[in-house]
Amino acid sequence: MVEQALSSLDQYDLEIKGIRKGRGFWIVNCKNGDYVLKEYRGSRERVLLQKTLTTQVMEETGVIVQEIVPNKEGELISMDGDERKYMLQTYMEGRECNLKDNKECALAVSTMAKMHKGMYVNKSDAPDVLPYSLKHEFEKRNTELRRIRRYLKEKRQKNDFERFLHKHFNYFFEKALEVEEEWRAYEAFCVKESDALAFCHGDYQHHNVWMSYHDIMNLQFEKYSADLPCRDLYLFMRKLLEKNNWDPEAGREILEIYEKERELTCAERISMIYRFAYPEKFWKIANYYFNSKKSFMPEKNTEKLERLLEQDNDREIFISRILQTP
Image 1 (cartoon, rainbow, N blue to C red):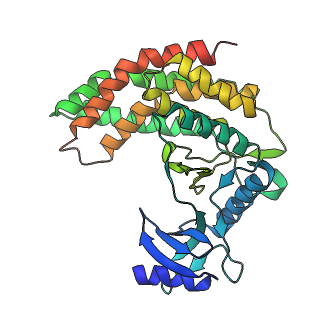
Image 2 (image 1 turned 60 degrees about the vertical axis):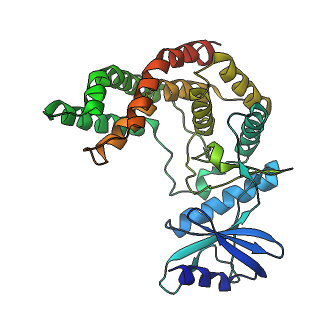
């Protein structure tokens, strides 16, 4: 399989000096720079739009992002002998953003805001793209939580983690239902249509923000989505604030750094309130439990849930002080 994958490199005009294995991809060292070869499971239409977005970001904002490299035939996807699909992308040596380094986090947020200025297309240029629905996402998650709650209620013999999860389930589940109901009402009356589709990176986390000595590159655009750009900001902020006990001033500083480059719309600010209000971390813990082997759960999952409970009041203080205050 490895030989088949690497054989797809023959379809590119490269002077290869060396190849080494990465996590789920190959790093190809060439005379004119480094590239990443990875398997691709998406559609041709999706990869074409990804290329449009990344090229637009580079040209309009100057932000360095990982771009797809066409092969000799001008195609963005190359096939191996077994008809597996691969794509070659730009790469630079570096390391992921350090969430404990305030300067690096500030640079990551500022770069994100600049990137978002180029993350849009006219609807007429992407007629088959459906805008992301936060309402449907909340509904889907809450359906899963109902299923998990029912399973826990009916299970007679519970291990320590299951007893702990069951004990605190309704506390978070009621919050999840409340957010879903309020967002449904807001979306029905306040969300307006636009001629342009805004996009977000979809997975803007520290491990996809690549730092070198003099540059920063945003990696892994495969999860891009036709969603409000603030989704990226929410994701990065949530990770960072969880590690800082939801410090309101840290949150305020992140928002200020972002808005120095790109001001959030009113719709985005409201969306941020509901995204933070929804107990996503609890849903992830419960969903991971339900879809894994239930005979044994690592102790760290109980620790995650305990920490979630400890921080919940701090999270609500952050929402009320920073997001809900004009």
